[in-house]
Length: 448
Image (tube, rainbow, N blue to C red; front, side, top):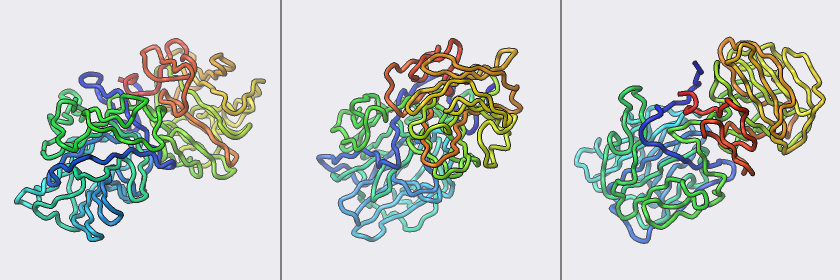
């Protein structure tokens, strides 16, 4: 059976979320709007699914403000905890943070925040749920009874930025319910009765209230569309390619920012763009590993010649924790831009090269008696070689040996607009070239 590293897999049944929106930290991607009239001020529910791409950085999820010293927000702290706070005229009105930290960049998580300041019991005024489970909170400043905040106010509401703190994450099913309180279970999600995994429910029939909204990201030409029917959000650096099929009900592989062999190879664009910062060998690997099946991915060098390379490595490879180029060990395989095939440090010149902005494909067959890795250029196979049975499981990988080299990875959820958008045989993924027959995109719906 395939091995999943960190990424949660919702069972293939029930309500499906088709789309998410990728918010890139580096380009300050966000959406915002100002309601025409104020809501309750005292009660709201904020709910969203999140797949983090950047960790250990302060980042806002929702930020409502009237001035720089007058705001209310929900954000990640640099400690990877979630903070909910309000500031009035420069003074902290309330401040809570979760005791738990959230630092899995491979998995979708569901956040459900309830603020009801009308409650007579102080501990009932703010509740935070993650994946349906209530979280322990540490209080810095108490939430006073009947506090009226800016979330649900007639003031600007920003998603994915605030106070110079942009968000690096995928978001799906972002909703605000004004003037009411509902628990997550049975409303925004539920536990699957077979697997026990927290999974989404259809939220479109909920009551949203005066300033409530619903961002479902289903309209690629209008990702700020309020599916509840209210005024749309204004998009900032959010365009059609920000729409993704990576979702809580079909989690796609990305490159793993926690990978130990990726020092000085930072990731952007939903952890699918890698840019080298020095001339030392370094690698990034996919968040999902496989030990059986047939799998396809596409890669492209957008800057650099000869030394960006693409391939696979075993999850138990020494390259997981040490610096070295892909293909330098017996359990890793790589094709470099200059047409050099490497395994175990041995070089083979296949006689075919490629330049920048050329989409290359990799297919790995782990089901046949002879296991193979195949390389494709322009949709045509250019090289094939036998590979070993993985000791643990293979991850796709990119490798860089020169500074200022840049590569893009596409496991079926591209960051560059495609001319063809071909799917695999099961209808999943979007690739420039159709995957070979029987080869699939690396996503959880194909693993189930």
